[in-house]
Length: 107
Image 1 (cartoon, rainbow, N blue to C red):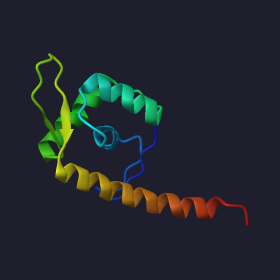
Image 2: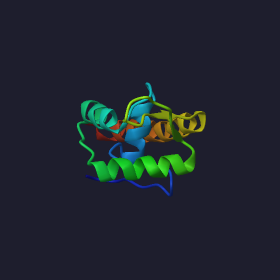
Image 3: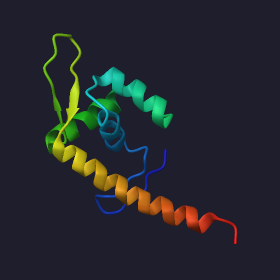
Image 4: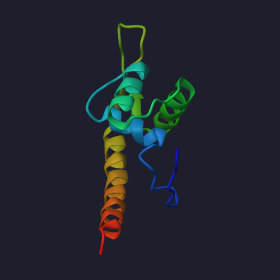
């Protein structure tokens, strides 16, 4: 797995936090559902330690929150601040992708 860094902002799409935020962008999910969703859209299977470490960091930052559930599984929800952060991250990645695609095209 490769990571691209731009001081606290640019991350590779394999960054667990970015993957969790992207997964929650279309609705509440518990951990196992996030793991399956991330595997489906990114082709990456996060281990439980990686997933729940990312969830903890995202909760601490206020970007996701746990929601009540009658089930034993604990679903999480993307907050408005988390959605804004995700959009900012995706905007940066999109700029990098556009430049990279333009530069790798044959002359």
